Image (cartoon, rainbow, N blue to C red; front, side):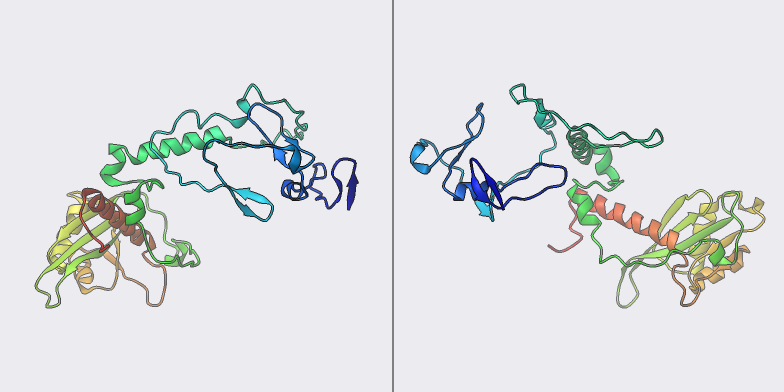
Length: 305
């Protein structure tokens, strides 16, 4: 309890490195109205009888959460944000200057980076403009927080956390690749498949481990001949100059037959081991996200509303 010469005896709150504070709502509830008019200093009146308020227009009444007034408003973000929003609130010439606390001295090898409101609004405005640009709407790469198509096309289940393994030591301490085509990975995306197996649609995805180049080839068949043809199209006519080519995929029979025909070393999926082909699986997910975003942006209804 603290006793003051103006507000009497009451409970105060002690804040870190700040003066003793009391709730404004508690003082108003004690019978002292609080007034704050534009271009004037705020003040308390001694009692409600000393105040006469006449409001000709409508009132914006706030809700009360304990002793804090809460004003509710419906807002909408626009691509073109007014430059006045980016102005800091302390730039008013009528505000009374206050003595700021001295900034702590930091060592020479440390730098304190503080993001201002102007920088935050500037980055937000840049993302809004980028989400409306033609370059972003062509493939929606990278994901933009303010793009509705990006949010709809990248909705997935709850994230599962697994331990990351070393990509080379977990595969038998393989040496690092030094050129294009030495080690590749391939898998299928099932686009559509009928119950009787007459109408099928696949996309074979091939990735080079050295360059990260991704190749996707649509196909209506799922056999060794199509896999062989797509692998040769990915490597090009110079694949004979590569002394040893390792192809990583699952245990599908068409991949085994294609690697045997071409003389590649086949690295199949290990049983009960995750992840084995995780890099390609993540690239396939990115490819699916971009394709889905392009379809959603074009107006195709992929999901039922």
